[in-house]
Image 1 (spheres, rainbow, N blue to C red):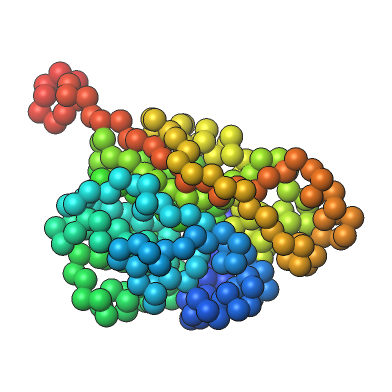
Image 2 (image 1 turned 90 degrees about the vertical axis):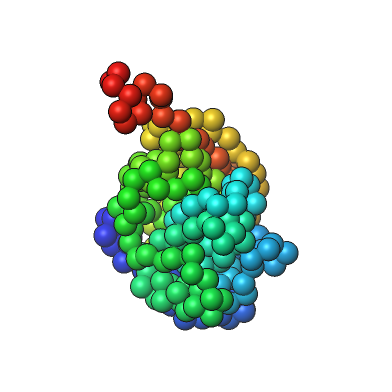
Length: 281
């Protein structure tokens, strides 16, 4: 479809527009700021409103799960949110880590970082920080986080191997992640694969479920578990922008499935022999 830098440019532009709209505006247009560039709004997003720490100003409806619900976050933890948007998951995580914990949100879109910082300032939080940067090259030191969360973002990252390698790097030994994302079982029609709008909408950037889990294993994670899974149905009115009626019918009759999953993985704890100063490595 496009090379990595072109894909990143598409995502920045789309999500910059989204940052300057309310959730209601995005939902009213069915699928976001322009065209169907944010299909996840109307179709993927779960309801956050009952969760402690929820802040409506930070909720742009961009997720495809509730990773903080499964992330086993504890008081005093340091949590990193990959693709933090306007801060929605960060503020929920902050309620779980408490005043003695720390939450760091990372997003590559300047407009999102600005909005998230404004939201944090309004709430008076001094232990929630937002940094601009890319997930393939996180602006965070290694062995920093107890928990990493992310919500419907890694499917937008062209190099998923680097993304999970960076997730592994910033986690402390014995730390873990809980990530909600979109994956595929079967092949999408060519019209969807080539559509930049569907990439920014979290559909055509998704990869095969089996490949996604293999990338996580190859990054070094253990105890990989799918915590939640749900099938996603893209409405015909969206598909018609990219497929003919015959193509839609064939797609519906195929074995292709689009799924939202929340997946968990552990970074192995450091061996006592290899701790600094142990003298045996």
